[in-house]
Every structure is written in C-alpha cells, then in structure tokens.
Image (cartoon, rainbow, N blue to C red; front, side):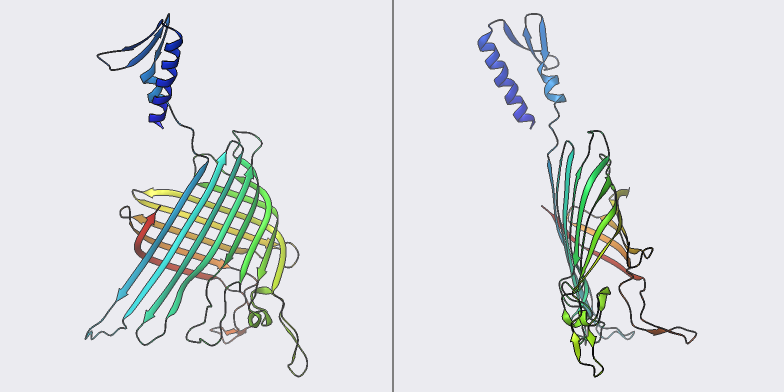
Length: 341
C-alpha cells in the first residue's frame, strides 16, 4: 500500500508540475525529506507518506487446519499397559465482513478424533461440525450495539456408541442436529475480542433423522407409538421445535506471552415446554503457541440439555433414578501442528 501511495503522489505532482511551471521539488540533504514547493505553499511529501494509513480491509479471513497425535508403546514393560495411538484433526474457517454500520461474521468448525488401542477396535474420541453466522447493523458509527440476526447449526459426522456396545448407536449424523435462528441485539466493541448477544425470541429446532433413535424419543423428540401387542403404529417424530430466549458470549484474550484463552458460553431456555430449565453449552480453551506451527491445547466443554435423558441408574443409597438429564463434561489435552493460510 505504501508503494501505491508513493506512485500516486509522484503521478499527481508530475501532472501538476506539467500544468504549473512554478512548482518545484526540493530534497533536504540532511534529513532526506522531500518537499513540494509552489509559490508560498510547501508540502512535506515524506511526512505525508509516513503518516499514511490505509483503510482496514472489509473482509477478514482466517483459515486454520491442525492435527494432534499421541502414541504410547510398551515392550516387556512389567508395570503393564496397552499400546495405543490417538489422532485428532481439526479445522476452523472464518469469513468476517465489517464496513461502516454493517458487520457479518461467519465461521465453520470441524473436529474428528479416533483412538486405536491394542486388543480393541477403533473408537471415536471427538466429533463435531458447526456453522455459525451473525449479521448485525448499528444505527450510529460509534455505537458498539448492533441489531443482529444469528443462526447456529451443530451436528456430528459419524455414529456414536456407548462402548463396548457397538450394535446400538446412541447418536449419528443429524441425530442430533441443532439449528437456532433468532433476532436480538449484540454488544461488539471495536478492537476487542468480546461479544455479547441477547435474543428474546429464538427458534431452536432439534433434528433426529435416525428413525431408530427417533422412535426411542431421543434428544427430546416425541417417540413412537405402540399398540398393546408392541406393534409400532406411529413413527417417532424427527423434529422438535422450540421458541425461547438465547444468550451467548464469546471472549478471547492473551493471558501470558504466547498463551491465549478463548471462552464461549451459550444459554437457552424455552418459553412453552420447560421455561426456566436452561440449556448450557460452555467451551473453554487455552492455547500455548510454541512457534508458528506447533501448539499445545487444553480444553474443557460442559453441556447440560434438559432434553437429553440418560438411562436409569441406582444411587449409592440404593434409590433408583429414572431417565433424567445429567451434566456432560469433556476435557482434552494435546500437542500438535497447525497451519494458517
């Protein structure tokens, strides 16, 4: 951009000089500064070029792909242990637009991990696919508040099992799949990696396209109907729709040299079916950047969904608890390579 600016000024002054013979170009031999002199007016061309700041680009693009691999092997190890290898692939793509009163943020996140352990078949350790988009408009140029429309889509790639049972999947692609769409207001300050979004009216659709899981009433959809002989007379529903309140927050910060933290929190409650029961999705990640290509990550994810029921269980006191929701928690730690382009 600086080269383009210099060419612009040179062309401009050459054209002006061609029209006015009184114009002169002077270079200070001590400071090497270039001046344009015309009559009583003097312009410091060097200063103008140094102070020139190009307008920020309207589109900001982020492309990240990475892989984490961990392995452990034993040979005549008397303490015991199984040989194993774990691999995790991940990708993140962002396309963000900002100009004057309009901003449009888009991201796609993909993660998939597998584990191979001696004496066992491959097992899935990580599986996620998400697309998020937020379109915002502000009334004043200096305001940090935007009228926004937000859409979120989440699902997974492959079937999930409660190992070692591999005959009865407990999840699959679009079983569940979640789609949220609503209108609200977003607080997004300039030059800060902080966003707070509130929507008083958001539609949440839960998809269970695997009919076996839909018949079981998984993930909150209405299950199949059976007659007295156990014969199915009505399929389970594949979609459940809710209208409620959505609150989201995302925050990124540098906590130490080459150590970065990101926090994402989503809260949702339905107006009609279970108002006050709050669905929670909280993701916290800490990244240590070793160099341009090597990073270490530690992450946690906490989920509570009132529509996701777990099998009945027996408490330590001997009491039997029926199908009910539970807090889901996941922790991960890995070192791998990452490539930005």
